[in-house]
Length: 115
Image (cartoon, rainbow, N blue to C red; front, side):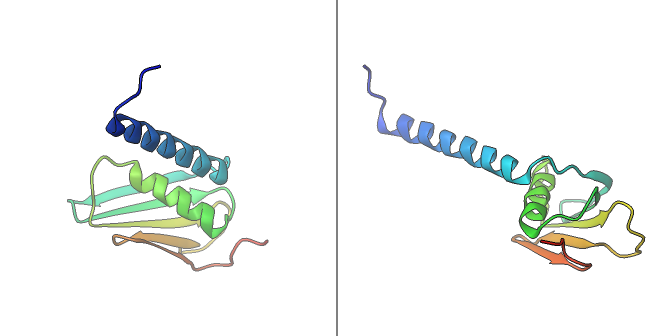
């Protein structure tokens, strides 16, 4: 049996940890789908996204979906705003929003999901 140098073992371990974290995030987010209805960028400064959910979700799921949207761009923005609407709800305002400035902040404006 050949022993890998410590750097190769560390990289292998790190890759395994990333794969497990991705699998866990996917499992936690479940099959929640969303539709992006707007995706605009103001240079490298700001990205604004509007997304519609089929139903309300909890804050943890909303954060996972927001992270997925943020990471879907190959560009780095100083500020990313995601406004969330819920299908079938008639409102001029977002049900919730997520901001990355640079850390994530979730604000649920409407009624939260029932437990």
